[in-house]
Amino acid sequence: MKQTSRFMRFLGGRDLFYMLALLLLIGITIFIYNQISFIFYPLNVILSTIAPPVILAFIVYYLLNPIVNLLERMRIKRIWGILIIILGISGLLTGIILLSAPAIQSQVTDLAENFPTYLNQMGEGITTWLQNSFLGPYYDEGYNWFITNFSDIPEMIGGYLVDAFQSVRNVANTLTTVVVTIITFPFILFFLLKDGDRFKRFSLKLLPPKYRKDVNHILHNMDTQVGSYIQGQIIVASCIGILLFIGYLIIGLDYAITLAIIAAITSVVPYLGPTIAIIPAIIIALVDSPFMLLKLAIVWAAVQFLEGNFVSPNIMGRTMKIHPLTIIIVLLIAGNLIGIIGVILGIPGYAMLKVIVTYLFSKFKQRYNKYYGEDYGSYQLSDEEETD
Image (cartoon, one colour):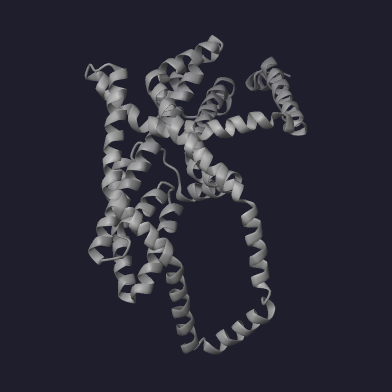
């Protein structure tokens, strides 16, 4: 009886029943929402419209907030520091865009027009090689089998094209979302930089005093983890883009600046991003010549070596340590659930979840040591866990 009583106290005693009742209430709420979700369609539209500029504003907030804090320590009022940074970066980006836009636009247009030709040339080259190699007889048999069994592919493609044309309105909705995001996110960013700490303190005051310290601890760790990750990943992606641009110029690869920009953007997603970025460069190099493909491989290997041994270790040192396999699994699951947004936000979301789980596990270890440590051995606690 004594052991059972201690076990119940370990689980929380009477608080356990309140927690179970709360979880039951949440489950009932989710079930009811699922049955009458159509009523909340306007709310879903509002949230889907607000979410992109808010997410973008938070990403830029983590990039600019350290600079604003530095200016504030230099005795520049926060609001003036925010205005100086926003105006300065806006002017710098405008100048860069105006100077580089003609070259980028020309390369992007040319690449979009010629890329199908590159694909056809690559396909013809592979076909010729297969026909002239020891795989030639097997290729002819496979080709005849393909023609026999898939002769209706043009009709299938036509059907898909009809469906695509019927989905043009989705493109219009996407463009509307992009325009709304670009217009509204600077205002959200301004107030985040100006009143972010004040909003956090106000939110904590809404909570019961008993939970404020715990919630503040969790929010602080989330802020550190996510902020460090976003800052580091964007800086690393920019370094990769610059290094690849220099390498592409050295080897004389066509569309150097466009391919480097694609690599910088996709490298924001770890592991999967660089793999996607190299595909168009490989196709262009392969059509050019096998020697160009070899030079591209050397440039890519050199950039990956510099990024893996010098850039990432120094820039990403303060971020959470996640095993590469965990990152790939998180990206695949998040991408399957939410699409491209999930791929971009999967790792920051995992970081926040990891902070919560780690904190709950530290509380579990403390409670275990309190009720069972003397009899069965205690967990070893870190200095931070002992002071919680």
